[in-house]
Image 1 (cartoon, rainbow, N blue to C red):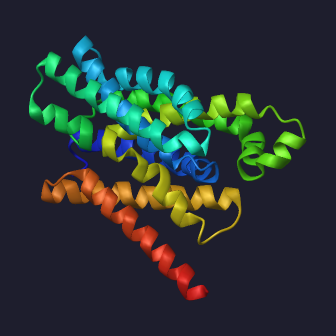
Image 2 (cartoon, rainbow, N blue to C red):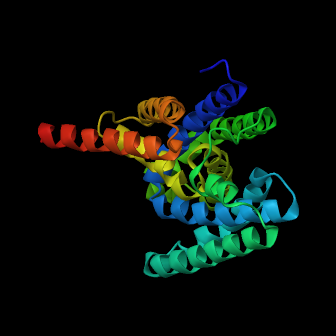
Length: 263
């Protein structure tokens, strides 16, 4: 299996995606931003479709749209009273734009399906190199702001009392989340990004209780889903996103069962 270049690319990309998604997911859960990953997935679809329409790599279009939109959507959804309506409006507009751009680009249906639900064979070595650069940038930034981001995410009131630069941190985190969404979409597709950015971290919190351990376990859960999902997709020729979704959901339900048994 790994003798094929496209599977080598898929596993390298999948490993990067699992690491980024596992670590970022801990802060997504802590900051109650699961809604934002779902909205950014639709925005990512529109961005990828726009990239195809412009003759770019889909990843470049996704980066453009998600980076610009993440801050605006985050601000729109900052108040819980308007969060649901903001999500619905932005998601509807993004999906509509994505369909329009794909139609104008006159691309085939299989290419559109790959954007929406991911594709093992659609990842080139150039994509992997670009994803490595993006992932390195995200991880390096996380290392620099880790202590402050952890404080702000898990004790926001205390962070404000201490005079921490919370608004700047929020902007940085939203940009990192946009990059993570664009990277993760290469395997699971734009519509299922939230799976890797929420479920591994959500499951991890039932087993461990420190931020570092949660991030480590979330990465392991994400790696299990991606690696096994890629293998099963290769064997069956079924969509890799289906297997990743099923595995991550299974891990989460097991975590719920273990927590229920403890209590």
